[in-house]
Image 1: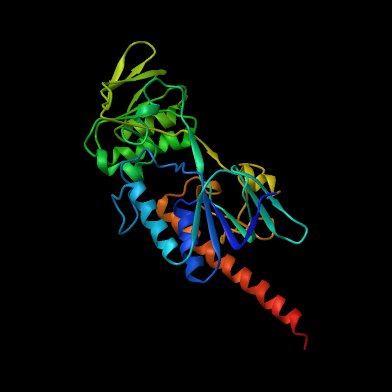
Image 2 (image 1 turned 90 degrees about the vertical axis):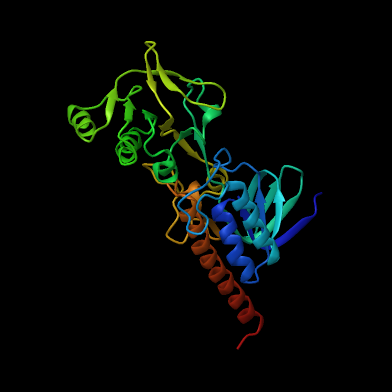
Length: 313
């Protein structure tokens, strides 16, 4: 039988939200374990943007800096995948890892992020994160004045918004419908704003390895492009939360968490992209901080209750 190690809080996922929460909680003198599988969403990106004082920082440098800070206050890290999480009758969380180890805690924060499911377009995946992007706020400034192609993606409304937002950075923006049918009003709004619209399905991205020249359509025509944007299907890594019975939104299927990250299951919190797919690095970090403060307050109430019960009036 595996030896169990008990903690105040276990944080699953050590990205921006998990690290920020870990920093707040370790500084508050909580016993914190962070478990991370080593698969950050923004790993392909060369730089992250929009985070004041960290703008332009490589994602891996950001993670390394955050780990060092949390470790300096006594936080412990384990790189592993979590197999199962269960809540016992006495409200203790039991986290089983892939290597057979078992960790337990009073509180649980899930900050496992999401996965971008890319369309099956030849040449797209290998350029993802540095020549193909999804967020104009994260990468628009870096491609200003360039030839930008926006490929219609699974998220229809976001695809149209991308085309409009990127027009602010360049007068050479082309929206390739790729299966999205535009209404006459939508077509007029985009073209009136200066966005070129090309109807057709995308077959592949063209260019030598490490470069991008154009986006080819199924009819053989091509749209010249220095940078490409697409809105992929985003899948939260929320299986652990759902296995614990956390309530989900009937319309979005996202796990429901309040403004402080509290889910419907007592002792379970969630922060970052796992519950807010639109969160950027800076907003995920902020959510992690707010959630950590809520968790610490919840732990305090448990400690006060236990102390009062141990010393009756």
